[in-house]
Every structure is written in C-alpha cells, then in structure tokens.
Image (cartoon, rainbow over all chains, first blue to last red; front, side, top):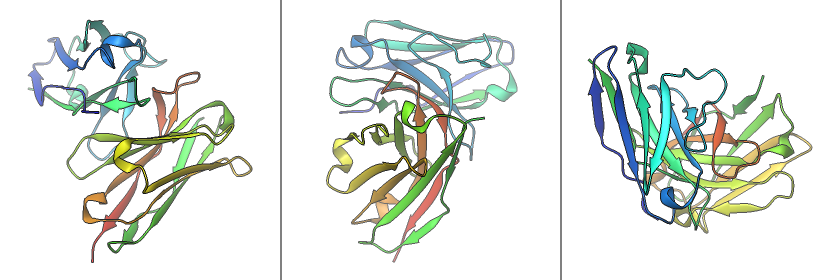
Length: 110
Length: 120
C-alpha cells in the first residue's frame, strides 16, 4: 500500500488561506469517510485537526476545515497565523489496512 | 485528562529486540484501539499496527509483519510494542496513539514518543 500523495510544501502569508491536498485511490480516500488530518510541530507528537473528512475535534479552531472530492481530500486553513507553521499529514482508512498516512506537507507562514 | 506515557529512549544493536510500553490514564483502556506509529528522523509518519485492548485482536502493516508484536495488558492499562531483528533503518521515534472512539482508523491522542536508536 503506497502512502497517500501530498505536496511536499506549501506557503502563505499571515491572514491568507491555504489548501493542502491528499490524493489516494478508490480503495482508500475515495472509498471511505474516514479521512483525518494531523498537525505536527518540530519535536512534538502529532495532533488531530480533522476527522471523518470534515469534523473538528473539540478545541480545534474553525479556521481549519476539511473536504473531499473523489479520491482527493483537502485541508484548508484560513486566516493563517504564524503558529500554524508545522508539518501536516493526512490519513485514510483503506480496504486492506485501517490506516495509511500521506507523506506530509511542510507549511511555511511567510 | 487523557494521558499516554511511554517508556524511555532505547539504544539497541542490530539484530536485537526492543519493547516499548505505553501506560494510559484518564479513560477506559478497553474502549479504544491503540495504534503504533513510526517516524524516522526527518521523515513522515508510518502506521505500524494496532491492538484492540478489549479482545487482544491485532492488525499489522505488511511492512512490519513477522517482526512486530503489539499487545495490551488490561490489568495494567498498558500497551506494548515489540520489534525484533532490528536494523539501522528502524532508528526512529515510536508513538503509541489512541484511536477515536468507534473508529479503527482515526487517532485522537498521542504519546510523547520513544526514540529507538539502532547502532553497532
């Protein structure tokens, strides 16, 4: 099972919006509602930001939103803040294993 | 407060076995799957496997099949990850991580990570 495909890096200025894509297949992203997104700052454990494609856990800012179209899921961060600078990983349920991660995207806030 | 407390850093020689513990508190251990995730230095997250503490059922990623054992001790609210035949490529931080209630694929709480260094 290959990792889901994410862009290696994205960047934006404070206040702007960015979108990170996560592309899989009909056997993972496209076939199930279980797509999640994680934020990881250097030296820290990942943190759940979005689950079941669009849902935010308690305490996560509404600036973070998720969506899916076909085999591609997306994480959008609006009103970028400097503290949003981090690595972001998508993950999906698959037909063969419960979890597969994307390769990760480094977000730089310029 | 949900907490996942992992055992400390390990240094192992190639061919050896490492066993990491993850003691939980703040929730009912048997209500959530427990995942293990590997992160090599400067690399991304790689899912290794999970255990259902309620019945001990495990699922492993193909990459680790045959070398990986995950189990759970419900009397101690502790999960374990054992990886054998270690090689240099296994040098990584290993996270235990609690699954979202009712989901086998999403993770809502993470341990702090345990660094395993494999070196001769």
